[in-house]
Picture 1: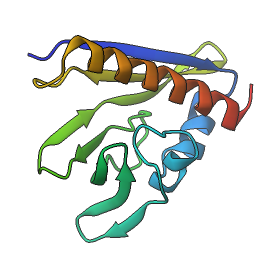
Picture 2: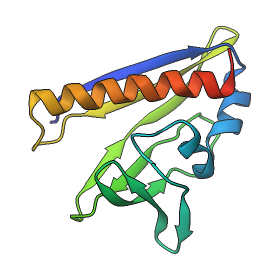
Picture 3: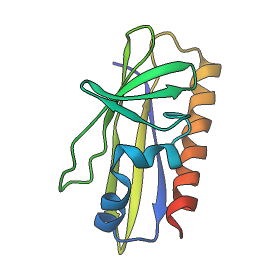
Length: 131
């Protein structure tokens, strides 16, 4: 098992409306700088973009009724990182939750840096969608 941390941000929007707005892969570059640092391009095996450490291929969970936005990031070396991401109801609003798994080759400093990046990206998502 990999150590993990889950981060969240509360957004004052109906959770289903928020999910419908942000689930599309094309929306991720607007807020997820840790995932995509350029526009996403689709091919037969997923989506391609430039990540923090080079080119990456991403597969996304299809649109669903449960707010699941999981994705799998294939790095340049062929390794794949699973990123669980959910939009859930929080009263009249929404909670967006992302779980970060510490990869086997990550030291404490790298895991901490990735955690800070996730927090920054979630704050950016809140700015992009308002409230």
